[in-house]
Length: 376
Ligand code: PLP
Image (cartoon, helix red, strand yellow):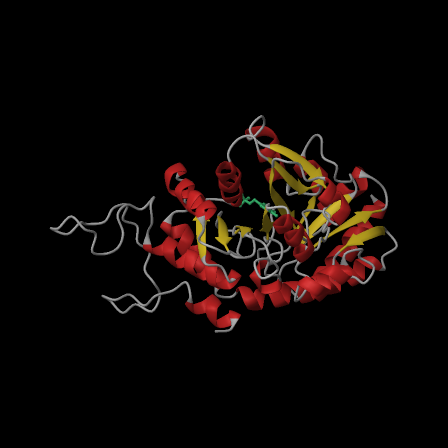
């Protein structure tokens, strides 16, 4: 089956009893046993598994070309399950531009348990040199949040394999529509399903998908059930519903982002645009090799400092000034103040999640906001 067909059918089952075309939401926390003590419906207790979660995991596994998937209550819970499964005393290599929530999870919650070095993954020599005797995992994020840095997934997965190390790719920005890390050699792929997979800014969730149902994966599935950071059936239903339109949404997100990136690139008040679809992006060739298109996320640097950047995000009318990404509505944010103290993100960087509005309206909105930024 092609990816559009998988997105619609792999997470949905026609209800056996009512013949409802859309799978019902099973709110029950527990499932009746038969006289023989068995569970004839195949479910025991909803933290362990439930029909809506199974459907969500099924569609994500199929979209990523994975043997198995596990759904979590957030993207961070999914990432945390990987770190927990590694156990204490290991070293991991993570991107120098890692999503700040996962970076903080490693630095604050796993402090003293996991050793981590943040390395520029676009520099393969630096990756090789960063490997230590206790390195067990390379965490990949490409394009990265918020600098849209691109690294070569296949090359890093190869380095990892040659050194007996696992590689995991946070595929949140790209989704399986644009980039399929397991086909490029990664062991695991991670998602904040809160973003494009859900697609409507109304459900928090996360997922992992594994190339193989191996011992490490069994550990993760055990952590999913025993730690219990699982999504509610309603959240699974919402995410499955969002995924059905993912292939078409991603095409439109990319088209709109591309037009906005071109507009911003030629604006005199914009110093730099970070979008892998632009020919002058340092990772453009690698992005072209490993992505089918370049996605809906971009960042740009305005002339001036934090003041100018804040003026701009306050002057937009169609964009909403808010964090997060991947919804149908366009969002804009002054990223450094979202990341907080200690951030390395430039103070004049603005991150944009390009939505599905008409790109002419979005460009006009940015244009008037840039004019007002200069006037205020
Ligand atoms: N990974 C990336 C790239 C993200 O942008 C985010 C959230 O913004 C996460 C992971 C964490 O996801 P969640 O907020 O669902 O925990």
